[in-house]
Image 1 (spheres, helix red, strand yellow):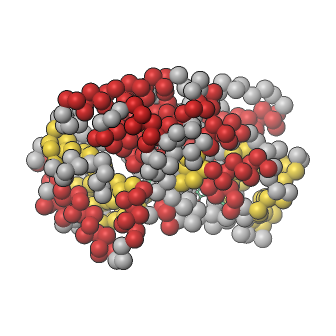
Image 2 (tube, rainbow, N blue to C red):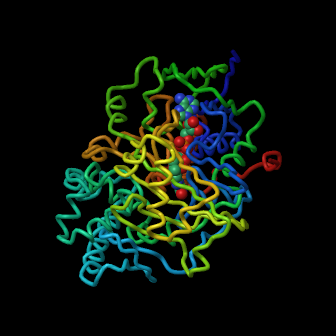
Length: 477
Ligand SMILES: Cc1cc2nc3c(=O)[nH]c(=O)nc-3n(C[C@H](O)[C@H](O)[C@H](O)COP(=O)(O)OP(=O)(O)OC[C@H]3O[C@@H](n4cnc5c(N)ncnc54)[C@H](O)[C@@H]3O)c2cc1C
């Protein structure tokens, strides 16, 4: 067992923990990062299969995600645009695949009008919200009492319009059925992306990708930490704390520190035993934050055959087994990759099947209903299964159950003595995204630096500007 003494110990080497560690190191503090897995990146994870680059976890960046943009600029990481040229495909609930152009789904004028009405309502609610404090919204209490499913139907009697709008937040983002989370939680999702318009615009929200892969961002940050800072395969299961500091117990490393950044997803806080126990309010709060469930399907073909047919690869099918598909070919690859998403109740159906062969057949058949017979025969077929990952337990992220955001949210970012909570799932802007993880990492680093150095913390700091420029020695990866 190695015993270390540091200014700060960080638990979790995902984007949030690593960003916090990097900022603290740049500011001259000594840091140790303890990570449960044998790799960095957390919910961002990349592999190569039969020559094709597969982003198993998070991958896209949108123009408003300036926290992540400023980090990759500092790291010298470039981005590339997702393939967007050509027409899209919409599958009606009756099973008809319609090829269309433009922003509106091909659903008939009355339904388009109802969808636009719902979008306008969501935009107005989101504009009145500070995503850092959704509980302060003038209608927060009432919006947190009703499910998003019910809210949509209170505002429109057009079932197709409700399902289409529901898709963008339920299956598309929180990856939970719309009856399990509140309208307030849905407005937060929109507000965290700038507006509901941004969220429903796939060309905005799924705009670009990292040339290094998204996990490459964490790998690059880890490469800038001094030796003897990052300790993989060290799950922290015990944390002793007092007002004076903490002792974090990993598998073969113990770290005594003045402060700890707890950078694991909120659903995993209770995996750690705290001595003394956390205060009552923190105990209760974290029980109301749970992971969604989505399967990310990767299918790689010899060529991107859909492009030859004038299609972008973008497909939508609310209430279909595979509800979204995109061209996910990595920069410079001649093969063609499709990524599909199977969310919540549909994901349950897939995991209930007995064999991998049954799953593959059902999923490819569903994808072929959008893009034709050629879809049935990929050379690589892979399902991301973060639900089985012990150190994540779901995808993409955590959100509150009905009524939880208004009741418990206000205390989610309060430190408990030397313990600071850092996760994309606690962010305002960039909520549930790598951008939010970076912002939270920087904000927690700033709070800790202010505490350690006896200076004031600027409450308005949004985590976009880096705290300290890297020194020459830290630039070498
Ligand atoms: C399938 C999928 C697709 C996604 N798509 C996108 C996307 O396109 N764009 C986007 O911006 N975001 C996307 N996301 C979300 C994004 O990946 C997350 O928001 C981001 O990774 C969160 O970073 P984090 O550091 O807060 O947490 P995590 O990435 O979860 O990192 C937490 C780390 O803590 C470690 N850990 C857990 N418990 C312990 C313990 N007890 N001791 C030590 N270590 C521990 C974990 O192993 C992990 O490495 C996606 C996520 C998934 C799963």
